Image (cartoon, rainbow, N blue to C red; front, side):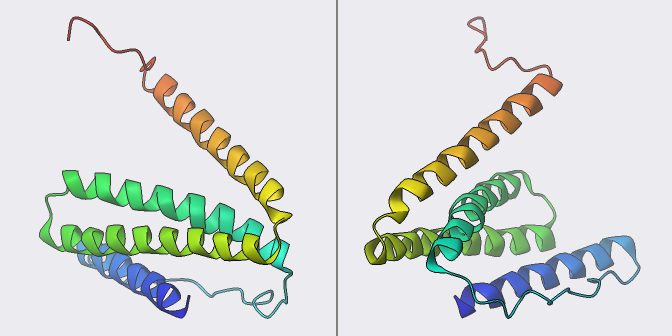
Length: 145
């Protein structure tokens, strides 16, 4: 977990460095609100958060980074994206292992997590459908193509 957190810091630093380079002005983060960072959370709370933020969001981030990398032409950006794509896939895998561990410790979580993951998948599909509709893509394959 600690390694993944440090990798996320590295992603942010690389993104700020690229933005600074491209914009010609220093770009960096604003102050981080850490008021809730010491909060003790229950296993179900951690598992739900992990399902949403780790399993779903990190998996999507890995896919998006890989797709963006495939179209990348700027060497510095490509190098950063390659690292991000690899790290995000590792973070997603870590999250799935964490859920497996959590369910092993508290099997009743499986039902809750199935609902959380189903809702996240439905939201992603709805977002994807809305994006395609806005782009004029009805999702149908053109047989003439």
